[in-house]
Image (tube, rainbow, N blue to C red):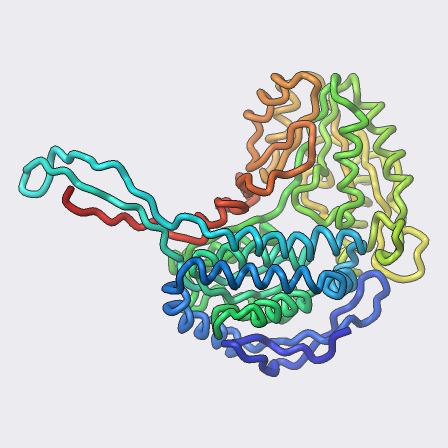
Length: 483
């Protein structure tokens, strides 16, 4: 599809000093295109270009920045089909998912942040009893939101459109400049996004994109003295390394890290609704999503029925080519990741879990496929039930009383999104308030795209989405004067 992609640095499309590497379609194992391998010097040049562009861009009127984002949204929406086809080929997502949840959501996010938000607000005058020289004084004040500066955006492989759009759009809206480091598995879509922004009129250096497989590329984009903030989506282990580097220079961080979402299902729950919601783990991005309810905690009265229906749900999902309209479960991103997912299933067996369905490689000639797999009779101390697998695998753990269910849900290093299913709405909300997670779905796996998004514990730092993203990519400055 794409041959010899170039880097986007300082408004120019430049040849990568590290050459090119293959991007492979995980469904067919065929080449999608050639991605550029930046050198460390080229990454530093991108950061320097963003620093140079920051002053003029930050002083641009918010309405002008918003108009550029709106044009970018229109360009992305106008190229929905070719962009979705590239995303499908790079990620293995089904055609419908690539069209609606990747490219479609990216366009929606640019439209969302094209809405100009108030950048400042007044604070009521305050009488200071101990003012200058000990005299009482009335002081006026204004809180002003200022851009952070240069933001390095390191994006995840599971969604090369919506994820970077969710970082770039609010960052630009608040007057920041960005250096985007896409995941090495599927960077070509991010370069298409850069082309859309360039066509929309983004000034030179405001947006830069550098890619590569080497860890040195990401490190250079994090430790550059020109960078003020790092926004990262990915594993907790990588996030910890980034945080250590950021700590040396007190750089701002926004991190969406791993998850092992607990789905607490009570005896009085609508089992069909719970199965449909939890079943998205098997099908949506082939389980490669950090918000998935992969750790099911089922109360004793509903346990057997829930396991039976989840197994039936998984068995009826079509696994196959993402381009076929009736496919529900496509491949995982790579052969290495397929092997990792399968190793966790085998580990679950050794730990004593029962593989109710799945556990074998599906009969597909090519591609990196994993069968939707259900592990039952798990305990919360099993690694397969505690560690993020990031694939179409669900573990089911039984519990008896409400307090035990809450304790099991909180007995984890993660805390991104948890879920509660119960017909007793009062209990559902009572339990939700006790869960140590950044978000809780009550009788749903849906999300409100204006609600704050982020994690507790090792699932991340900070909040974004909606207006919270505008807060994340800005600093608050207080201006005070005599009243």
